[in-house]
Length: 188
Image 1: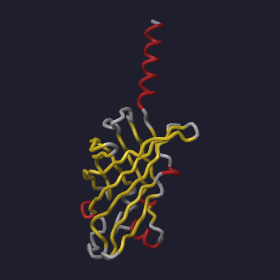
Image 2 (image 1 turned 60 degrees about the horizontal axis):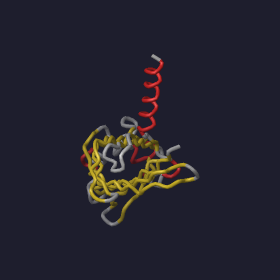
Image 3 (image 1 turned 180 degrees about the horizontal axis):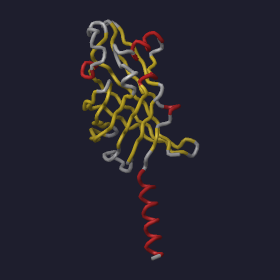
Image 4 (image 1 turned 90 degrees about the vertical axis):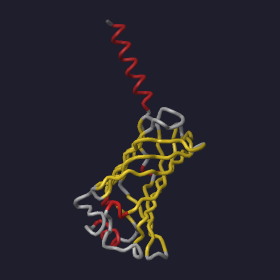
């Protein structure tokens, strides 16, 4: 009986050690976006309050890894308070009703070397749509005894598919929004 109990404890410990679940380092991660303004320039912004969980990162080819992103929509920051308040309003995100942005990956496909397609569901403004993003694995480093992994995620979505800013024509605010996220995951 003692051998069975010891074996169960040992196998549970090895499974949890092998699971490799990480949370992004908020000091070295960014969840950003850009969108054209009046067809002549781009406005950039980011969400200051967000978390990314990287789960099941056990294979070198990333095929079993899962990314789960949540962001507080009220933390949107474009560097202009009046614009941020407008983006939080019912004209765009309606943060009072739809306070959370969420992405849940469903699969990762290797394209070449460190390039992947990240497939998942994005929820914005209470609407969930499938999206395909470009994922780059930037490698890992030893940072003062802590192994740290780095990723860059990029991709385009259409704001019209999420009913964001439907009162504003594309000539004023572009329909295509480019997402860019730079992420670091320490193994702590």
